[in-house]
Length: 355
Image (cartoon, rainbow, N blue to C red; front, side):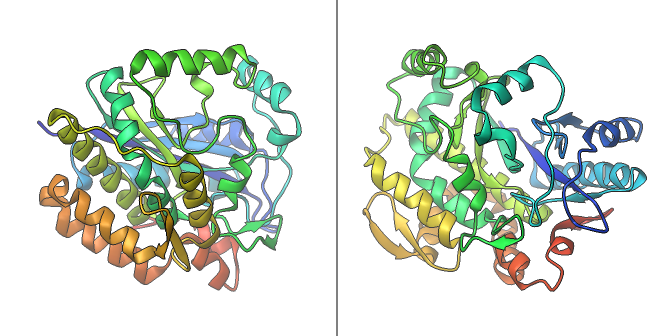
């Protein structure tokens, strides 16, 4: 049976003359909901952000079509409202932020204060279907070593308020300021996971059980494993590559679980160093091998990842190899932003972008 998957893409809204973010989400979402198209569009924490979510898909071709539809729909709505739709992990040129309405968003803003006040961070979240929470927790344990490689492929936030940070993903550094951020701990089982999340709520570290900041987690809303490690995808091929690799990692983990194979025991500090290295360099520098606990060429990490999941990719292997070539040929979002004469234009989405 084919494992379904879907993607939630977060985007920024920017002012065409200045390139700075603008709090236009309410207007853009209203316009988008009046346009035809499958999938859903949602508000985010800040009024400078919007989200497009695909329905569950069975194939990469179907998912690619849904991603383009969602982007086209929001880009059209944004233009109708006089703003630009931008796919970047952070706003390259900065801009004012305003919290969206609703009690939950207000509670989050009050809890985290300055940490969240300008947290205009956007990611590409991949959901992969699993049968139950027990499986989801076990899968999260198995995929932890590969999260840094997924981040390195997706880096798309080198600028912060117009300054080059020296990092390929400054979004990841911004996100690390939240309690419980980063790679999740290894859980014994679903009961252990549920208890640890409840403990974070009891400690006041998170607003509610749906608020965990881990880079992969059992989804609080759907029977899925949710990968939250990637920056906003610079284009559709980049989003598809994240989705294909994420689904293959889940499929591989489920197969290993059926054979009784435990997830590897890893040094938590080494894992944190691997995430930091991916955020710092992307594909342009060394990576940290979570299991060997030393620096290695990032190409070695990516090769190991592809070899590991190749059986799970099955008929998608040729497509995934082509997606890899497109990302490596075109550059990561961070590389494109740095190379562009007009930084903002390198991440602006137009109708039919990414085809």
